[in-house]
Image (cartoon, rainbow, N blue to C red):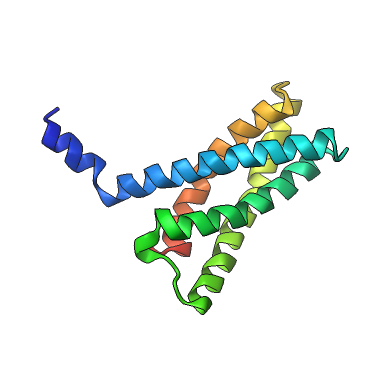
Length: 141
């Protein structure tokens, strides 16, 4: 492939947004996994309850980072836009919680995976859903 074609493809706004979304998501997945582990191992919570709590913490974190970096061109800058965006991302990502927790349960109970590994797979699959809805509704691109 011609270097200029490759560069043009990699600089396309959709590719840049997706790269940034995945980067933010990977960072948040690491935080979510550590929180999950801490809540299960030291908080003595059931892994599904701990997953739900850790997901909600990372929802807010990801909104701040995605608003400032991933979707900066469409970012919410006024207070009312920011709050509306935060509500919208909570609806999108909140609707993904049953999907992610259901997949986590299935991977642990049906596939026999350790809950931390199962959580990684569940994050990846539900991330596709979250990206599509967040980019279309939260940031309206």
